[in-house]
Image (cartoon, rainbow, N blue to C red; front, side, top):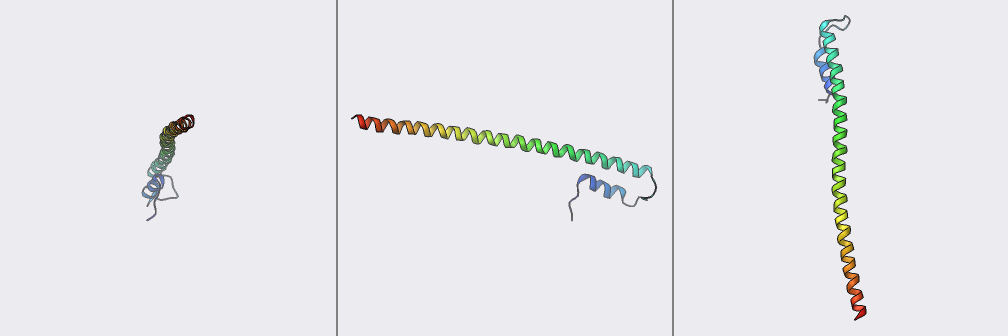
Length: 91
């Protein structure tokens, strides 16, 4: 079965069996419901994009922090190795 959006589902259920040629209270209510469903879909998509951006930023900060820690460890070990080599050269 095909996946439909919220507004498409509402349209299928609400307009099924309603006479399409004449305006009626029921049809107007369904059309208003479809409009509201579309607006909700837009809001949900926007919220999803914001959540993805926030999640990406958190992951990026975590990776950046880990790389910074790794970089510091590498510098420390390089300094220690350099000091050992210098001490050996002096002795």
